[in-house]
Image (cartoon, rainbow, N blue to C red; front, side):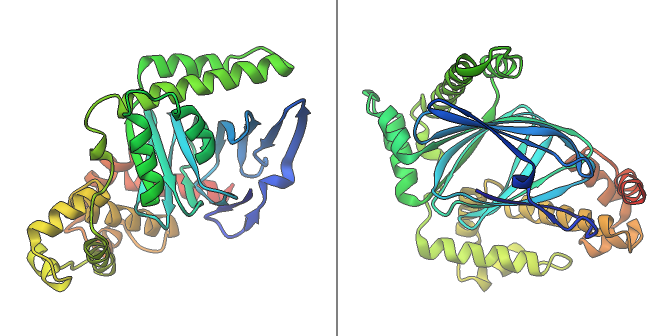
Length: 336
């Protein structure tokens, strides 16, 4: 795995976590501990190589500011993310919209092209467990799926090249996560314990996601030509954040009816056209605030909001912090 971490402040440049890695070899597997460099924050990432085609990463860290990680895996894998605190935003070429992973949520995703761009918010603790299973490893487990609910859904994901869904974390999942972070075992017993708990999390997730007859709702059933038109509509929105076309005009520009565009947009992005536009405007506004070159009122207008109060209200709701407090925190971090 090639991992690059980039802080928004160009002073830090690129830093490879692999340079900070400490490897502890065990019989039948390995444990890799990556500590966060002191100038970036504090905490660590612990990765366990478990059974063939499976690895588990336990993260507990806090960065001084937002960072971006570019990650390339050697092969596509089904990834289960259990976020206990903090938040991340992940992008992938196969995923038309970013995946926002927040506290109290469990996420399952699979992308045929295993290239990710991940942003982790700073100044708040990130505590999460990530379980990754190869396609072959998962197929081996699914051989016992006699009811035929889980296996067809995940096989379809492999055929389509992508899958992404999220659900609220259950109490049972939270208890397993607590056990994993509180584990006091050592050596081989520790590895077996953590692997078994990770598999328990996988079982809970698959049951929650596919243990009913509504599995098809997790897959964006959109024809290729229609998908290309919808992605073109998305690009037009991003290019014209301040003055976007009205929905009927947007649909006309991409050769669709506004009803088909609305339905297709919901299937692919999981939100309405207006909601997606708002998310992109807020993300752009956040970037402008971090640059600290414009006033908050100017940022609001540049991001497409009608006024600073409207922008501040939407920003607070989306990120849990006011634009002025966000900017103050960024300025303090830069001056430290």
